[in-house]
Image (cartoon, rainbow, N blue to C red; front, top):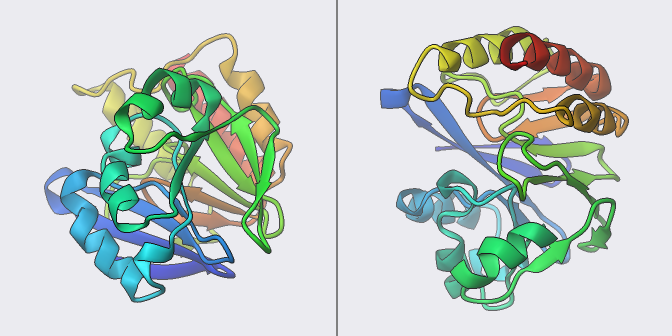
Amino acid sequence: MSVTEIAPDFYRISTYIPEIELQFNQFLIKDEEPLLFHTGMRVLFPAVREAIATIMDPAKIRWISFSHFEADECGSLNEWLQIAPAAQAVCSLVGALVSINDFALRPAKGMTDGEVFNTGQRRFRFAQTPHVPHCWEAGMLFEETTGTLLCSDLFHQNGNVEPMTDSDVIDRARKTLIDYQAGPFANYMPYTKHTDGIMQSLAALNPRTIAPMHGSAFTGDGGQAIRDLAIVMHDVLG
């Protein structure tokens, strides 16, 4: 487990599982109303809680967000809702209505495309991205004051890579997609007639930091990186 500040008050909490050569990343944003993006699987809950305790009191988390309904995205949501009495899930309206309001101990805040909420000093814009990276209810958060895109499985990179980099991560992401297409996880990212349009909309946000679930966070020209990834996704998946 490692903890790295990737932007002011943005902390990347990462666990590397060597058996599958994969990092699982959660992101804690300290603010008046702290936000956790990704909970991790239930088995990781004790370790993630301990890592967050080195930064702040885990019971003070106010918002818990994620892209879609999947174990590494929100598997320990209820464990977090139990220890943080004021916490509430934040996800797409579709996700809230279809899965989370039934699964979670308390109802979620369902967001629509372009909707914004503040946590104090930070301003989060919700981007609805159905089937990008996957699942009908998928969405992402863009923190406007730091220009940080919490992008779920986009820019997925295998291996125990560095916490953050300003070097191009496209080759790593391409290799991961190609490797997955050759194994049991083939087609885990669908490619539809809407995929490129969604990617171009994300690129238009011009993020300065891109924070993926798996692999290094990228700092630099995030808009160009997303456009480059869109080409890779078309070539490998389309």
